[in-house]
Image (tube, rainbow, N blue to C red; front, side, top):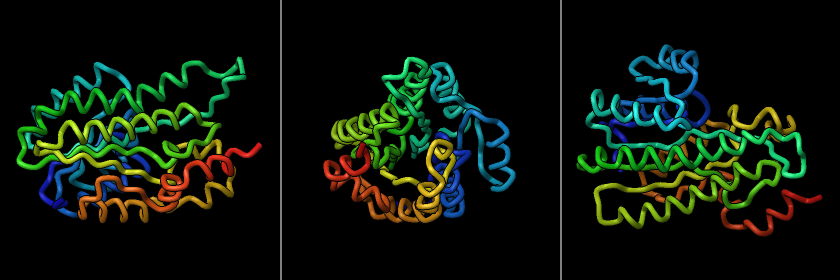
Length: 245
């Protein structure tokens, strides 16, 4: 695909992979919109990247997603790329009665419910464009789960399955459907509950985004990045190693 002259929405674009991807796509000559829950982080991103468009939107909320659609139709009718990137990750122990029972609901709403609903809402707008793309950001943990974050892993596995079905349903349309499968990267997502040595081993976000850009340009529809390639191809062996004890 051609990565210039597009109008792109990236959910969860104020931090991590979403922000670096927004920066690089902006440099390539695209109109880039990011949305997120925290206005201050969005404004920081815009201040550092003149030309970036921002929208406060909690994508886990049904009404916020509907409002986002109306705003996009009014302000960016040429939108042709949706990148479902927003995600949350929580520790969750089914055996622990003090576990916060609201955390799984937040993960399901953000990581799975939001991509389903946003894709449904934006599909008519995307279908009006000559060329369009939907890219879902899943995770290597959707293929080889880490048991301490079980709901996160399950939502990403579901997003992988959803992407396969969506790609099949849209196979005869103008819309290409990508799945981006990153490994652990140097971002805020989940960093607070990982050992420091694990965080230090994370792939630099900039390197991951470079691979994403190349994969999109080469039309690699299932795009596993870095160590995620092993998580996808060696899932059973690695599950035993990752969850030993």
